[in-house]
Length: 131
Image 1 (cartoon, rainbow, N blue to C red):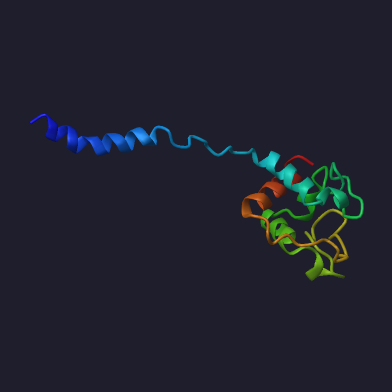
Image 2: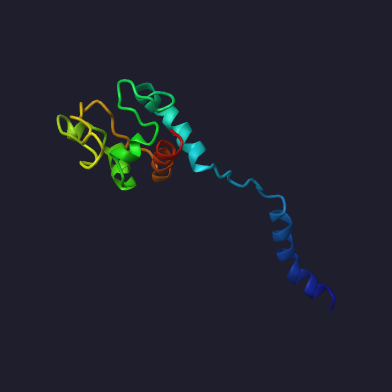
């Protein structure tokens, strides 16, 4: 009589026992600003916009300049995704920006359509909050 409950529960116990030795690795969650800095450097943004966003070949992003140019984050995300190519020769950014819109766009900034949404949002946060 005692053997029947043991035989019925044995497979369940075996499943739990084997599960105890499974992969316990949890994915590390990066701070978006840390991820944004990593992507900014890895994708070469710093080579044109400067390591500290001070500008160079590309316009400066530091001291809130990216927020002045793109008051809406969605506009900055779209700019990063498409690059400046579609806007070559045209002014861009907020027309109410002190000093007027930026531009005309030279069309040399590449687009980054292959970055994940998380990576683009992290870069935008980094440019807006850290530079």
